[in-house]
Image 1 (cartoon, rainbow, N blue to C red):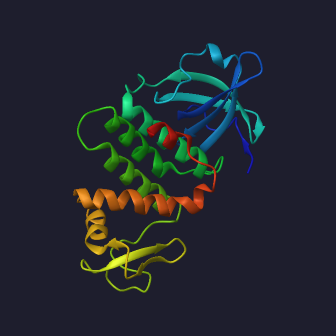
Image 2: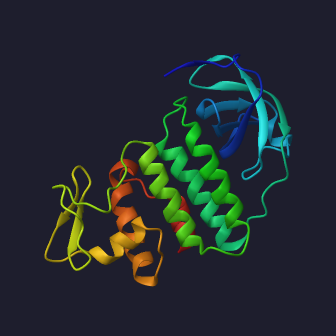
Image 3: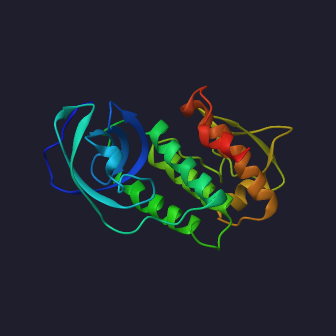
Length: 224
């Protein structure tokens, strides 16, 4: 998909990834409210302290094709103070969006969950793994791969005393061994007891795997 970068004026964007380009420039992957994932060249971008992850920006672009050129760029607020595991979690969110979103395929309904999750990761409160699981569930739903956790692939209600496996193409299937139905119902109800959190981590990893492909996530390596 190609796009015309001169339409619409300033757009709220967040930097997902940067890499050096030529002597002083950067190639950016950004997440925007109108265009979705944006690929852009930032001329002399290595000198621009605004071009960092976790800072809300407003920017415009020019050019056509898969890689636009960054034009005007200004801060919309301070960078979120992510540190330690919170920083790794933020990098994981950015890598998910970079890997799963197609360039210039808008998903405006993802912007608020993304910002809310980053903001929560910068504070003490909800456990970080729960924040990630909530975002993963939302991301899958927005992309059309949402998980039905209250009924199985045959349309029968998930039983609290049952066990289930996930078929990525069909959904949950009853099985002799698998994830406890009680945990699946808890996840669906946003009730995050310890067992549900363990199940959610395994379940979401299995659900995301077909869409991420075989290349390992760098952010997961950081956790190790």
